[in-house]
Length: 153
Image 1 (cartoon, rainbow, N blue to C red):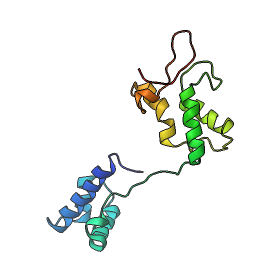
Image 2 (cartoon, rainbow, N blue to C red):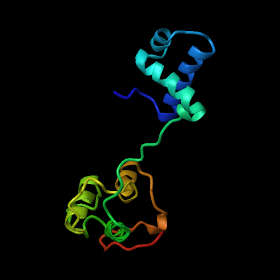
Image 3 (tube, rainbow, N blue to C red):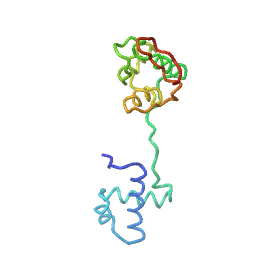
């Protein structure tokens, strides 16, 4: 199970553990107890530091899976979202990740709905938080009693 903390925090933890063993002479068992890790893990960190130097303990990025939508599909999804959820056939104009997934699976004929790119789904997350992921001029406005129009305000 992965310990709590950012990748940077965990890198600092590894470096501190190795420093305690190498420079201050603590045993792997003592350091493991101090940093809350398994003794074998602490020994592995020391070995990684010896073999790889500074880079041996560096945080490794984990970007996640690649999007299943090609560039054209992503652009089409953005256009569908800009037109609004009601224009896409939903009862309200609120975009949720589930609705975006449905649009991807139905309108874009992509069987994989869980691999939507973060950029494509950012609008549903940003609307919940009240922050815009796109420039204000790119977000469609819905005038009272009217149809959505694009443009700033």
